[in-house]
Length: 353
Image (spheres, rainbow, N blue to C red):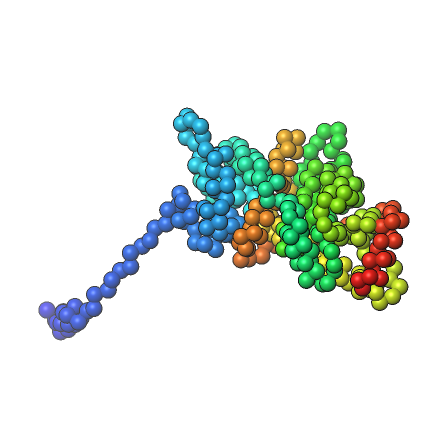
């Protein structure tokens, strides 16, 4: 044995004597079959648009009874996985991406599951989307609007938003083409001060004007018959009425300027509502390719509106921003204003501004 061999043998012996044992951390293998276990909280929220707590304790108990099978035939998809599959579709609008994230489920099963879960959620529309039921609740709603920019007696802000759809085909397909040249549904929403949806109308093609939808809606009857305390605010596409105030197009004095400024800031609630709704559920900004003739698109829109309100009521905000395109601005088409509506607006401005 040469000099170098003696040196390295002695070095290794000394090194082993002084070595400090190192504890190798145990690897934590997450269960890929359980999204609650596999994804961290922020990853889960990004994919399913709600926190784990809300999905487990609120959404699943709400619809579980509608998703459970009444017999043991076949290999059924558990209700929790049906719900997550549907929420993932709402977050993407893409069947292929859903299939990739939740493996082992065919596209046909995915489509049927989304329809089934959407119906189960949409059945709670009247429970979660409505004006306050009591006079005290309505007055609290009015006060919350007043705190935004000092506009008195506001019960809600009304506007329409276009949900893109694929060409439905058939003889009436062109009625779904809006003024931007895209196929869509024009959805009317009345928004509350917390950006919640108080009323929704989902049945009109994209070519239908906002004012026509309002004239056909039950909300118009409710306000005309004073079933709801307060006023509506709308843009210049609506006719000015004693219960629906629109902005002034020609300002003549400081009172009218203050009125317009307060009106614009307060009415912005409905635009922000659209932004928050579509940011949580990007499928509403992308082209929905579900079947229109079977009302699947209408059911999906109603279901996401219910979930939007649940998220607001539970303060369950998504902790990130999606790249949602801005709401397209409608061309201002002034409808024939009601004489009584114009007179009331003048009186209202003199009294409050």
